[in-house]
Image (cartoon, rainbow over all chains, first blue to last red; front, top):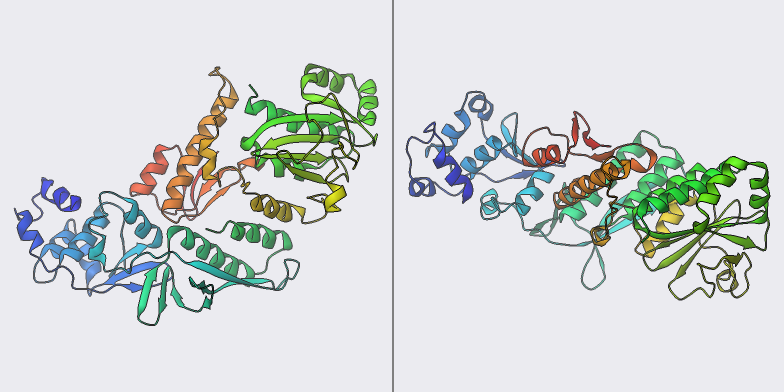
Length: 207
Length: 247
């Protein structure tokens, strides 16, 4: 795990001369993620307090009393400018999640984040009205299964859930989903036919 | 060798001519500029009215005289001109005014696009010959035609520039003149393509407004971190609340 090597190479002895094996002996995870439209949240009481002092976040995350490999990894992601602190939560927006999946530095550590696996789907869109209608809408109404059937699934951000199964949409699907979300927002404040046509063409660039 | 900038110059010349003759249609110019990097060959086909117009407008006549290898004569309808361009395996014939636009797959047309004289007829050998079997042009320039045309082209796997990964396979424009604005355009295109690739892999949306003299946008609203650093390296500039832009 490259991020552990980076931590150990630091000159400020932030980990109190801990060895790699000591770090790896931390519990793997002590938190489950929650999902929102913006991304993935990992919430801890008083996190903001630790984030405000220099190195406070890393010291807290490496403390076996509170921390885990997951928290230490999240703190390192904040150091690298990937994760953000949002009140008492670590926030990874969806583009951060996809970035981590493409980065050689992180590919072997993503499992620590406890995320569902990426699964490609054929998304199904439904249009109501025509582009000349001021109340024209377009929305996601599920996905097409391998048998060609339309299946409904719950969606939060880029996470789909059907029964006990959850999965992460691919990066291309997330782009389509975010375009639909933009279209919905734009429709709610009123759009011209040209605006609707532009959005419709954008949606036509489906994965 | 046909250089990319020659194709763009011809396209602009065609629409400049229409404008000068009072048939301005900037929308069409803007539309086709979105695909200009994929245009591998162009030809202007000019009708009788345009040739008469040249006799009154020496300046335009001179421009066309200098570019005469790029144009042919159009017989049939004196008021019509046409612009022929090749994109991938398709030959696209865009007529002036109400002539519509016809798209021929390689081998589907019986006319020779490189001939010195071409006909606007719907008969065998005419630029509109497809109308015989389709009943109408592939693109009709009625209000809202751009989205229909873009969908039509998407159906032929022709995507606007930068939305096309296949674009990487197309030979870049190269002019051995470092003072040339085209070289600058080439560097910007390369940066935009790299940004597009990065953005796609991270599920980040982009928007290309270069075709209408706007910017190429990467909607990533953060100034730090590895993605931001890469965009900075590519020459993009950060605008808080929106993302990164380059033009």
